[in-house]
Image 1 (cartoon, helix red, strand yellow):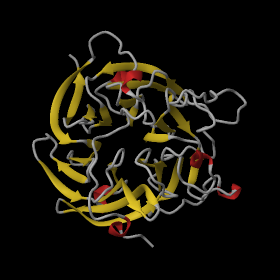
Image 2: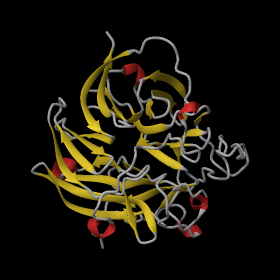
Image 3: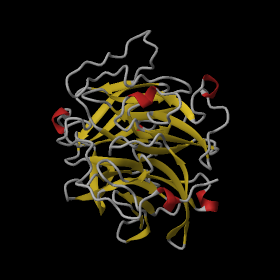
Amino acid sequence: MHVSLLALLPVALIACSGNVEASSDPASDNVATQAATMPAGAKPFTETVIADFDSPWALAFLPDRRMLVSEKDGRMLLVSADGKTKSVIATLPVDSAGQGALMDIVPAPGFAQNKQVYFSYSAAGDGGKGVVLARGVLADDRLRQIEALFRAGPLVEGNGHYSGRIAFSPDGKYLFFTAGDRQKFTPAQDKQATLGKVLRLTLDGKPAPGNPLAAQGFNPAVWSYGHRNLLGLAFDAQGNLWEQEMGPKGGDEVNLIRPGLNYGWPNASNGSHYDGRDIPDHKPGDGYEPPKVSWNPVISPGGLMIYAGNRFPQWKGDAFIGGLSSKALVRVDLNGTEARKGDQWDMGARIRDVAEGPDGAIYVLEDGREGSQGRLIRLDPRS
């Protein structure tokens, strides 16, 4: 049975001082002083500002080229293709303290027929807070029939590492969902917790049949484990599932997600604890799946997109990552199941999300931190 959305959430929004993946708190993620150095040279694209928002978090395109944008404090917006008009289609009472937000937003595989939209948000409940997967129906330019489908657990105190990214399997039958470790470390290795995991669910939010670790005593929703703060998830054209996550002090990662594997957190990382304590690096034979790419200094990875368009043919099949503290757009060269670092362009602002438009252009969404507007910018090839 689906749980009522409002039963899971407090009525009032909880205010916060801004997105804090990179903040003055030594325990928070990826402080700005770790930002990697940008390469010199002109960017190979032009930048056109399309619209601006209040602390936006995610962007998704609809078949008619309109856009859905989520804002941190709970507003979901419907935006015209040219960015000139926008309307609020839902206001969700999320717990937006710290890293909490109305987070990812993704149209269903059958959106053209069913008009379903999946989204995630942070919410308070009995015993703490957690990330929730929900679904609604876009009708008459409003989000209706809202229902909560899944809640990661256990609920814990704190305002960090919710994750909440959504990706549908290429066949449209399953939904993959990321649940962060909530800055609690050990749940990522806990068999019964769904924190620090990639989860495979049915479209109704139930554990998918045939998940690889259920027979070993894991929560039946778990697909892979040993993750920290998973802020990007996407399939490539070959059906490979890629994920990126924030490391601690160093050790941001891009991972190829395979069923049943342990990615090591908090027992292995290419970074260190904020207090200087060492974490063993990934090494052959340690039992943990190493990242395909890692960064130290960090980039503070936000959203992840794998480019499939034709406007930038030289980058077809590559991954693009929004950099928060690095204020960058980062390209990763994907080649089958291998990956290596590509370009890193200075964007002059924290990049929260990146998406491919129906026109094949690349769209980046600024974070809009510390009271500034987060702009939506279209990138086109430089002629």
